[in-house]
Each structure stands twice: as C-alpha cells, then as structure tokens.
Image (tube, rainbow, N blue to C red):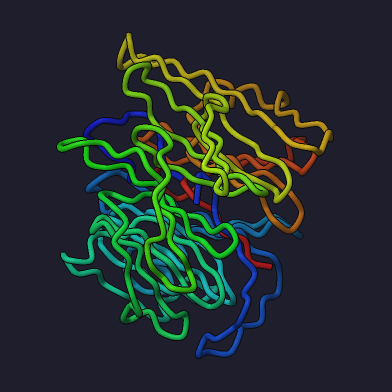
Length: 357
C-alpha cells in the first residue's frame, strides 16, 4: 500500500521493479521442486483495509494459461490486507503483506512453507531484497531486517535506518533504503546505506524530499521522490561512490533489463475529480539502441500504471494497470516492445511480478 494520507498517485515500487535474483547459495531446508514450465507470479495489492490481496500465476509459454488466487487455493485462506512486495529467490517465493503484518516463504504452488509475523517494535513490512542466501525487509519500525532463507521465523539482525523506509535495493556490497519520513511529522530526504558484511548503517546520502523508489542500474542508483510543490514524481540519478545527485527526469515507475533503464512517465489530472484524466508514456535510456515501442496499445497512454517489470530471462515487459476499484489488467510485450497479450488479474492494483524458470 502506498502512503494514503498524502499521495494519490502510485509511488512505490524493488521497485519500482521486482527484484529477481539468482540464488548465490541455495540453503533452503527443503529440496527444490520440479518446475515443469516458466511461471510469472502476480501480486495484487487489493484495496486499503479491504483484506483482499491475491496472488496469481501466469504461464507465458505454451498455452499462456492463468491461475487466479493460488495462495487461497493452496492455504485455504486469503492472502490478507495490502500485499506489498513479491520476489523469487532460490526455489521459493517471498511475499510481504503490509496490512496483515507478515512475511511468508511460499513454495511454487503458493503454499506457505514458513511465516514471520512482525511485532509492533519491528514494524509493518514493506519491501524485499535478497543476496547470498539472505532476505532483507524494510519495515515501518524504521529498520531493515535480515532473515536467513533456511528459516524466516526469527530475524537474525536489524539495522535502524530512519523513519518509514520504503524500497530497498542492493548494489555491490551495500544495501540502499529510500527513507521517506513521516508526513505527520517531517519528510525525510535520504538514502540509508547499509554495509552488508557488517550489517550496519554506513552513511546516508541526501537525494530529495520523500524518496520512495530506488533501483540499481550499472554503477548508478535511480530514486523516485514525490515533489509536494509541483505534485509530480521526479527521478534522481545518484552516484553512490561520489554521492553526486542530479535530477534525471520525471517518472513514476522504474525497471531495468540489467543494461538499460526503463521508466514510466505518468500524470493524472484531478481538477475535475472524480472525472480524472491520466496521460502515460514509456521511456528507455541506455546504451542499447534497439527500439522500444508501445504504440500498438494506445489505451495504455490513458491508464494508471501500477506494475512495471521486466522478465530477466528474455526481456519481456509486464505492465499492470489499475483504477483502484476493479480487477487490474496485465499487458505483456516482447523485449522489442511489441504487444503479445493482455489478461485480467484476480484482484485490484497488481503491483509486483516474480519470475521463476
């Protein structure tokens, strides 16, 4: 769930983007399951306090089949309130559920293998990252918490990073957390830098007021913050070595194929609310000069984009739209930007995808 009290536009996302990471060490206690074909897991955030988050799976190969609400089918209960983030790591799926206050490790059928329920002191879970057999979670307790994938029942450490950390990403041996602050008290404007080896706060980099999304692309970081004066979302480019920060462009979502930066530019006019008007476009920046064309689906230019992900295996784009009231729609494009298919999800506001081969 995005911060309800100020922002109407979609602000957060690893990312911005789903973090897909190959497992550096597979130390899960269960043997890997046999995966018959590629799967794309779709997390539907649901409505705030609606207790209606859902998890679906899409099979992009073969007949392009889609299974709705696999978590409910596997566990005999709903996912809960406000599904926040989703990543694939090793042979497991990890999901944080903000409103229902837990982190779950799932098998590929969506069944809970293990669960961690956060205490009031730990704070509600937000975003996820993974490296070297560990899962990292930002929480509204002002922390980044660390879990060993062999068991997530209890954390193995935490670092105080600042008020309301949002998205986190890993670049080299450091973890970066966007520290948004509290609109009721004071916004923050920093990235917290956590040394992963020592698992301690190394420093803070001042970027811009109210940062929420952070993505690592090559040597640089890209941070989205919300400008409360212009009511726009801006992308800041950050060099984590020199600490140089500059405005890059306006943008609402970020994604990378590992080489290029892709982002969504989106603006919604609320002057005639509830008759809103959204204008959306997609931009590619990088050394790869291959085409990037989404004009075959003109309805996207008037849609609010809530999910923007790139399949790390083949470069396909997945774009999820929302009206915050009805089930979302996923658009799939090839790596050349050409439209492949679209389908409806089982819930409101699809916000993250995780890819399992």
